[in-house]
Image (cartoon, rainbow, N blue to C red; front, top):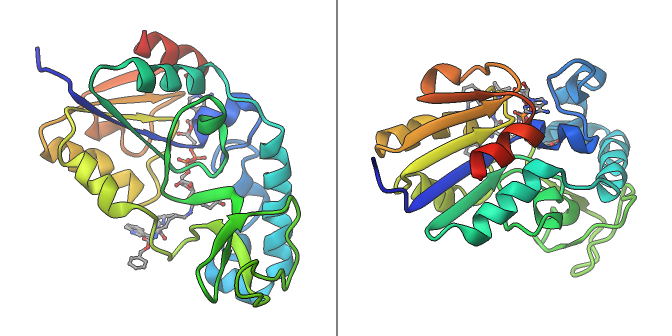
Length: 227
Ligand SMILES: CC(C)NC(=O)[C@H](Cc1c[nH]c2ccccc12)NC(=O)[C@H](CCCC/N=C(/NCCC(=O)O)S[C@H]1O[C@H](COP(=O)(O)OP(=O)(O)OC[C@H]2O[C@@H](n3cnc4c(N)ncnc43)[C@H](O)[C@@H]2O)[C@@H](O)[C@H]1O)NC(=O)OCc1ccccc1
């Protein structure tokens, strides 16, 4: 039996589904109501910043009142109790991992943060951002949601690749494996000789790349997997 000293866990929208936050690609998901090209690219923000702000304002307000579920709680428990290291990487922009007491690397940003497109300053976003929102540092009217849009480089990639290249176990929870570079992490971990497990409601586009699969609702499967 291989010693597990370092675990890397990647989470996606599926872990927050049972907290009432819609996923992207499931039935009635966000991308069935909005076109990525209209709300989640830098070009969309340049073309129609009001539409993009309204899209993220609605999600920010919804996420602010959302509660972590048993899956978030179990990962927070694992991170504090596991003798080795647990690196939690999330594609989610909601703060539910933190609300559960965990520390997560937000590779796609956070709804609760604003970013100045001029000076790069970051601050706590107001519930509703407006077009021309001034930066709280340089005062330029160029505030945007601190979210990684399609075509933009995800955050913390060096730290994430360092962890993937030295982990003993890689787990992906509630992600469809359709968006890169996150979808390629399992391959990176495999190349490092790590064991790999996927926890999802159903098979994903990357299921073939995992050694083990645990199928079911995250709020049930994750606590069982952790304990
Ligand atoms: C569509 C796809 C083909 N396109 C891409 O991957 C693109 C382009 C690309 C790059 N490399 C490639 C290689 C091949 C092909 C394309 C590309 N990638 C990018 O643009 C990335 C940036 C991608 C990030 C975009 N932002 C997001 N989110 C923030 C926004 C927002 O939140 O609004 S992506 C967004 O979708 C991704 C996938 O979503 P999931 O979380 O997986 O959710 P989904 O709904 O899809 O699936 C839910 C899953 O949960 C399961 N589930 C549901 N309920 C439950 C439940 N209850 N329990 C358990 N499981 C459950 C379901 O079965 C399902 O499997 C996540 O990453 C999520 O964050 N940037 C970049 O590559 O930059 C380059 C670069 C390089 C140098 C310099 C500059 C730039």
